[in-house]
Image 1 (spheres, rainbow, N blue to C red):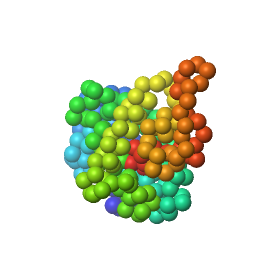
Image 2 (image 1 turned 90 degrees about the horizontal axis):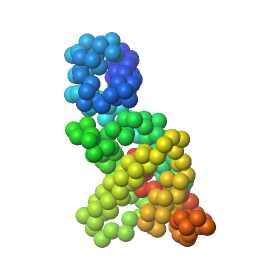
Image 3 (image 1 turned 30 degrees about the vertical axis):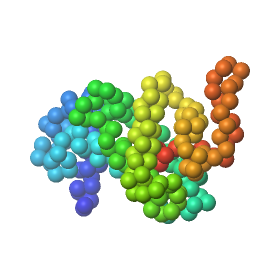
Image 4 (image 1 turned 60 degrees about the vertical axis):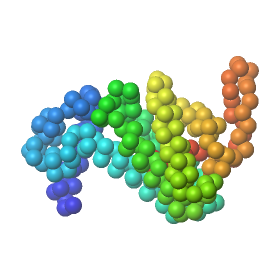
Length: 220
């Protein structure tokens, strides 16, 4: 991609993020996107098949960058720290695009749902860690491995969707504590969790070696 194309993509990316934060992306037409970005209608199709497709591509690119920053060539002793770092980064990403993700993960998202994109991305990052031998998954074969990856990724998407219903500012540490209690003990950063009941009768996570979440690893 040359400098001119990159400039056009940057303009289109900023425009679709702005429009999708103000209305459902399914209500954004190609003509409206092109007009707002100051490009010809045909130019939009050079980068995406629809406004919804462009939105997914923009969000996925940011998530890919987080994955590259935190998860490439992670050695087993560093896996827990990498999981913590990428989890926080992904949660900040999701919170930054609050309205977009609430719409995209909601029950009425329809064809503009972001669930499949997030699931595919989360699983990709989980598999990256497994292929690098950063983490060893207790699976008997490839089918079990895929089942574990999909179960953890989609479960965390559900947790993120619920987290997004909280008013801002949202407590990232509270989310991490919750997912730490839900994540298998073999995942890095989740060992030694003790769940008790505090004075208010609420569940509270006890000391642990670190904090980690599989789903957000998939997002990074």
